[in-house]
Image (cartoon, rainbow, N blue to C red):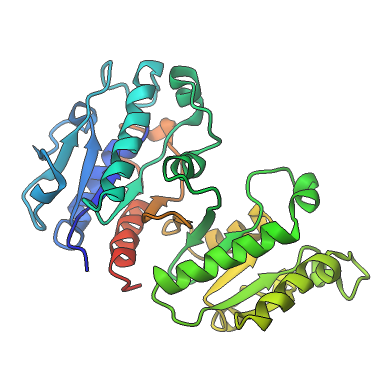
Length: 322
């Protein structure tokens, strides 16, 4: 069991990340040891913080937010991203991954970035955080899981138009998503024999080929092959009957075919406490399931619930106590 703390990256400094870090520390100071990597000049005025030189200086129950300083160019401008700060934002993420890879932290929790600002100021060439982390960890195949108190979901395809889902959804992709999810549930979530529910692509899971054939020709053969290896998998299932309470009690995670099929049910069940978990990395990574919220940055109106849950989950995953 690692006693190393969690590293929290500040994300876009003009967004709500800095104030979320302070709110999370207020809530978790006696529960989860973590520290912030970022520029303390971007924290809300009056924040109690203490500079640390290394993660092992973090003290659970300390009197101030621990900060591993990483200076950004330019002043604090809540709600207005500055391209000059983009390279610093990227460097903070790289620094956190290096600490996790060396075992100096138990895992990382990443506050939201603003991709356009990173593209403009740092030539950021990745669709988002997840792909950048996969690059830094030299891990080609990773999976996005959204985890909440009542449901865990994995979309097989993510940020692509619905019209492109069928072409993107290959047997190889689906098998990889399922295998990575299964392995993470065992190794990180501490579930020895995970139960997986796999949704169909079409309404009523194709209804025997009457409303589409992908269930019969693509999804079912993959599931059959994995069952023969001993994986506990149900499906392809009709997505409209998978997410009520009785159905959720029968599985540990649901594999869905596209973004909204997965995210609508979890956000409906608990909008504020969903956590993004990257599966398949050699390190633990969580993040709150929302963006930079420039419109409320600096106002003190940000909701820290998802960040609090993301830090809690990172700590639990590090100790396999989920």
